[in-house]
Structure formats: C-alpha cells, structure tokens
Image 1: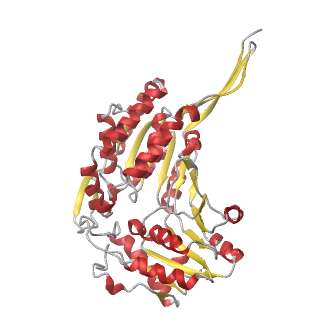
Image 2: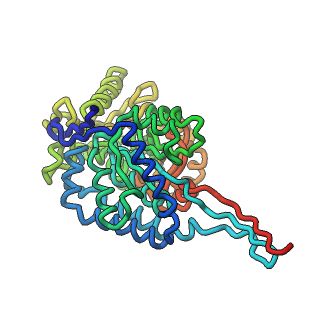
Image 3: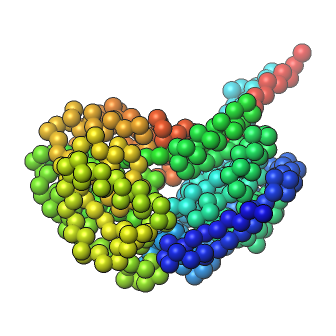
Length: 460
C-alpha cells in the first residue's frame, strides 16, 4: 500500500495523508467517468455552465476552511485570503464566452447544403494540477472542460493533497454528478500507466519539465491531446522612460509574492543603465520590508516555501551566484525566521550574469537577479537567452516600442507595465521548454474539444 503524504511547510508535520489507489481501482473509476460522458454532453450547454458555476459558488462558501488549509499545505499566508479573486474571474469569463466559443462555424446554410464545423468534447479530460496555485490552475481546465461536455478526472499534487477532494465535493454538492467530476489519489507510476493505456482523451499537466517529458513519453502512441505548462524564467525589462516606482512595486511583488512560487513570477530583471542604481535601491527597500513567518499569523507577508527541498534548490542557486561573484543586497539578519529549511528570506542579487544558474534555471523561490543593460538590443538578447518562454514584462511609456520588442521575444505572453497576471480573455500558453497547448480564452475551449465537420446535401 502506498500512502501519499502532505508534509506541511509550517511545522514539517504530516498535515494530511491518503492511500493511493491501485491501478485496477483507478481504472474502474475512469471507466465510470467515461460511461457518464455521453449523457453529460447531451445536457444543454446552458445547464452545464450553470452547474459548473454553482460548483464555483459552493467553493466560495468554503472560504473559512480553504484559506487556512492552503496555508497548512503549501505555506501561503492567510492574509492574502486564498485564490478566490482569480478563481472567480477565470470561471466567470469562460462561462461568459462558452456559447460563442462552442458555437458551430457555419460555412453554408442554403436550400441545397448545410455545411458547418461543430465542436465535440474529447471525452475524459485528465487534469494533473500543481500545488503553487492549486485552485486557480485547476479551474483553468476544469471549468471549460466540463462546460464543453467532457467529464473530468483530477489528480492533485501531494503538497496540496486535499484540494482536488474539496473541489469535487463542492461541485457534487452543487449538482454536478459524481461520475462527471472525480478526484483520484494516484502515485506517479499509476498515473503514467493510466495515460499509457489510453485511459484519457486529453491530459492537462502543470508542473516541471521533467514531469512533462514523462507524461509525453507515457502518452506516445495514444494520439491523445496534451496541454503542458512547465518551467519558466520570466524576465522583466525596465526601459529608460519607465515609471520607476510602479516598476519596482510590480516587479518586486511579481518576484516575491507566494514566496516566489508563481508560474509567471519575475525571476530576472534587466534595467536600463540610467535607472539601474535607483531601481536597485528601491527594490532592496521593498524586499527588506517583508515579514517572514508562520503563514497562519495575519502579520506574516512572506510564508515558507512549500517544501524544504524547494528551498534547498534556491539556496544552492544563491550560493552558486555568490561564489561566482554576485552580490546579495538584502540583509538576511532582518529575517530571523529563516531556519535553513522551508522558511527562506528574500534575496536580490546584482553583479549577476548568465553563467549563473540563478539567471538561467527556474528558481521558483524568493530570489531575483538584476542586470544593467545599455539598450533594447542587449535586453532582448538576454531575455531570449533562456530555455523557457512563458511571459515577459516590459516597462515603458511607449506601447509601440513594447509591441515591437515583444514581437521578438520568445514567449507566450507580453505584458506592458504589468506582470505576474493571467488574463482569462487571452490564451495562456508558452513556448520552448515551457511546454505546449493553451488554456482559457476562446482558444482554451478549442483545445478541450475537437472539430467535427458536417456536409449535408439537401437536394439530389
């Protein structure tokens, strides 16, 4: 028997544990989901949308349980109130565009022909959700997949073991049938075997590059669709005409919120030489004001990282950079709660370059390197010098300049004067080792359905 455990970063105790399902038991549940799919898809779209939104509303009613549960599982401070703002914004948006996104594309409707393309649900959608934003990242796929007529099986990361269980409970209490949306506790081997044996029609995974490769290998030959959001090393570029204070506040928040554990968090910053010294000084002041501590205490603004091993990776990157000549500017003595384990003080590094892992590899923690640049060409070359491509944040007063530079950046989303945000009306996608596919927007519905063509000749 395999037991999946959530080790809380708050105090290193076992916060929750569940027995992993055997392959045969999991296969039985997936088969039950597959049998339910056709009847669910036959329900009117409006009814499916309403039921999903009732499930969303039911989770909102659980706020008093959800917020401390997240803090215990992955360390986000309770003062930030969970993920309800983004969770609701994304759910509301996909509900508002579902009818248009799934409407047939009519080529001809005449006395002679009916020619159109309709969108058909894939069947069973498998969502493998991450721990860093366990509700928001899951709803990106869960809501539109169910609205489109798929059934959904969710498997959550062990660090947020209880989230899938709670989501399903809320949706079922709201009226979604329990064979239409189900949570499974699975170990890695069983997960990969289910994928390899063609148990699902579409797999959405958010996680590491290594995890994405394993899933892609398992799915080889099944011809099933994959949505993979993997690593990131998102850059910010501050140009000479930027609003300095706004750039500091937004980019530093993008670097350190959620202890830096954000898919589109800012991990490296390039600043025009004319603003570099002022930007660095203000950034250090910003980072030094955090209060690192127990996430269950309301005064805490920076909680522990989700796991000691994640913090160890960040510490190793910082150590490597310092050994190679970088300089750390945030006084670590300001953060007595840094225990060498999951609790990790924020750090800003200068005198960094791309020979250092902290500027090349995903950190996913509370550290950011800042480099001085002379011009757009130098900044562009550095931003593209990465195996990843999720977002880039450009700071300027000139939208045309931002768009011009943005066209040459190898990434999925370009922000101007904003960062670390997911716009549900735009496709959330990446390139290079960040993965493939896209969620949300009308394109998200297309990824969760397949086209079916009708060529109907009325007269002979």
